[in-house]
Amino acid sequence: MNLEKGMRGDAKMVVTEADTARALGSGTIDVLGSPRLIALCEEATCVAVGNALDEGTTTVGMRVQFDHLQPTPVGAEVIAEAILEKIEGRRLQFTVSATDAGGLVAAGKITRVLVDVDKFMTKCCTQ
Image (cartoon, rainbow, N blue to C red; front, side, top):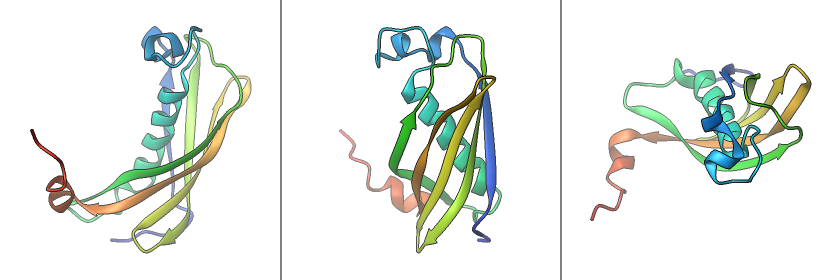
C-alpha cells in the first residue's frame, strides 16, 4: 500500500430530480440534497486513494463533518474534491469541498478507515 498525504481525487455529477432533497427525503425543496452531496464527496475520497490500496483492502466511512453552504439546482454540475490530509494508523482524514458554477457549495472533513474486505464482511449481521 502506498498512501501519502496530499493524494487528491475528484468526482463530478449533474444534479437530477433523483438527487434532490425532496426525492431523498431530507427536505422539501428541489435542490441538491445534502445526503447526495456527501456521497459525492465520499466518492472523491475513494478516487483519491483507490489506486494505492492493496487487493482485498478498501476504505469505509467512519465520520463526516460537513457544512452544506449553498443550494444547487437541478441541471447544474457539481465537482467534489478530496485531499488526504492525515494518516493515523488505519484512519485516513480527508478535507473535502464541492463547487458549482456559483462557487463553493460545501466543505468539511471525512474520515475513512482502511479495512480488509473479507474480515470486515464477517462482521455483518445476517438474519
